[in-house]
Every structure is written in C-alpha cells, then in structure tokens.
Length: 412
Image (cartoon, rainbow, N blue to C red; front, side):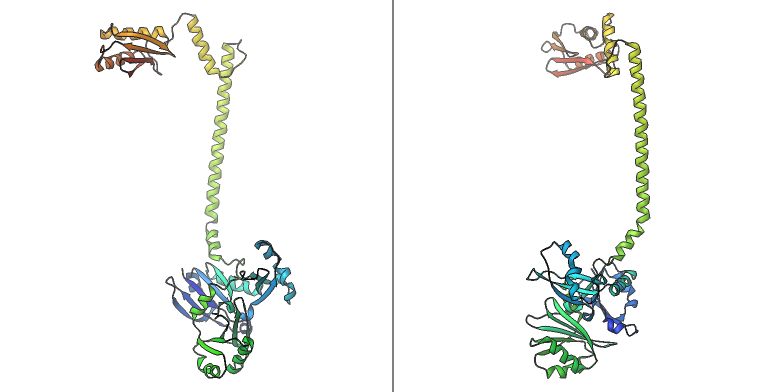
C-alpha cells in the first residue's frame, strides 16, 4: 500500500504570504521510498490521488502537547471530557482546537493531549481531500523523530521565516519553534532545551557544512543526516491522529456519493416489487375468501341442517359418500369392489386357484398367494389388468400382494 508523507512547514512561514514548499516522500508497496522532493502542496494533486494514504507531519511549532490528569472514564466519555480537562492550559477556546489523546504509557492517571488549531487543520485536510486523497492522517512532527533511550533528538529545517526547530525530549513529549537563520544560535537553543541529555540533531545535507564545525565544538551534540526513513519509522508509533473526525476519508465519501442514485433506484425497485407482491397476495387472499364463502353457501344450501362448517369440501365429500352408501352404491375402494375387480383380473389370466387368503384393512386389500403359484410374468399381467380398473398392485413380500385404488380412479 503506497503512502505519501508530507512535512508541512510551520504556520509562521506561511503567514509571510509566500507559498511555502513541502518536503514529501512516497513510500512504495515494497517498503522503500520511490519518490521524494520539495513542492508546494497544491502541486501534489497527482501524488495525493495515487497514494492509498496521506500522512501529514505537522510542524512541531503548530502542535502543542499537554499533560493532563484524567479521571477513570471510558474512552468515549474521556474524549467528551477533554475540552474541560485542557481548558486551564489553553489561552483560547477548546472548541476552536482539535484535541487528540496519545496512547497510554505507564501512568494511567495522566495522558498526553495533542492540540492544534481546528480551522487551520481543516483547511489542510479539505485541500488534500479535494485533491483525491483516499485517507488523511495528521501527526505531530516532534513525535516522529527517532529517540534514543536517555537522549534528546532534534531536527533542523530552513523555511521562509528562518530555521524551524523540532525537538523530541521524551516518548510523548516534544516542542517546536522558529528562530532566526543563525546556525550557532539555533544549536545553542537546542542544547539549552535538551539540558544535560545527549543531543542528536538531524540536519539536511544542504545545511550540514554550516553546522558540522559548530556541533563538533559543543559537548554532547551529534549530527546525523536527515532522511525520510527516520520520519516514516517514527510516524508508525507517533500516536495521536489529529485528522481523525475531520472528514479525512474523502475518496470513500465521493465513491459512496457516486453510488447514491444507483442505490436509491435499487431500493425503489425493491420497494415496487414488494408492493406488487403484497398487492398480489391481497388479491389472492380476497379470491380465496370469496371461494370459501361460495363453498360455504353451496354446502349450507345442500345441507341446511349442518350448523358447524369446518371444511366445506371435506364435509361435502363425506356426506356424498354416506349418501351413496345409503342408496346401495358401492364405493370404488370398498372391499366388495376391490375384491371383485381382483377376481375379474385373475379370471382373465386363468389363475383362479392361486389365492391362499385375503385381508382388507384401511382401504387396502392384502392378498396372500400360495407358494410358487405365480411368477413375475403373472405379476406384470395382473398389474396391467388392475390398472385398467383403476387399481394399483404392489408386491410387498414373497407371495404377498397389496391392492389399492389409484388417485385417478377408473372402471370398477
């Protein structure tokens, strides 16, 4: 995943009115720097749009790191309480600032809060989003410097207002300021701010000739070449992201906006289909109710003495069967009809003496045959003869046939 790192100059330099260049570097998928240089932020649109993520390193002079005592609250409640916790340490209104909590280190009763002016940072984030940034993070530059145990690290950069100093004194502490472009005064300032701790100063190659003789004469001061790898490694553990919550995922928002109308049309189509299905269901429900009503009316007209109607069709079939039985008509699945049809089928086959016994149960006639009285050919002929009479013959065991009425019915 490609990541574009941008070191934005201090506001003091941009207040001069001139467009200030930004140092940038593009980290490729392989983990190495594929492109770096210096350019105005407005000229980086192509790189911003091509990178999967943009990391903005804010000048240390523009980000204040405050240490505050925090009550034992959940993360969401602590975030809501931040303005009240830092109000005494700010000169302005906390509502005009972006507040970001650093991760917990050691003492859980104290936390470091990064503070930056909201309006200024929002302009930067919106500029990057307008250029096509997929995601933007804003980190304090002082917390991206390498830090040796027991030591202090610093970085020097030249801008339109003078020398920009970045100092990291602890894991979550650091500061920045802009001084006049005098190498000796800048080093003395850094040495004084570092106290007695060993000081490592990262200097760009263009300024190294001016600072090397001066650093050699100062005790406890070491010069190192300023390289992007230092800043990238530190950015991975820098902590508070000041761009979180400022609409820093612009590309994703634009992508969702492109799908807004297609999604609306899809939802509308689904709603229309659901409405159509409901309309069909209501229509069929009304038709079913009308059919049931007609059946009930027909049943009542035929059987006015029946007061309880649970299933008009089933009750009608039962009453018709009872009426047929009462008039002497034999049903097709009664024992007499099935046995007669079976006898006719056997007579047609010339097999009258093969039956050993008959049993009629649940409208099924079970025939027990004499041993070795019939073969497969006789079974097939009997099945065909009974099928013509609307009966089905199945062999359930050796010498055992079962005969029942088929659903379609037939001649008896």
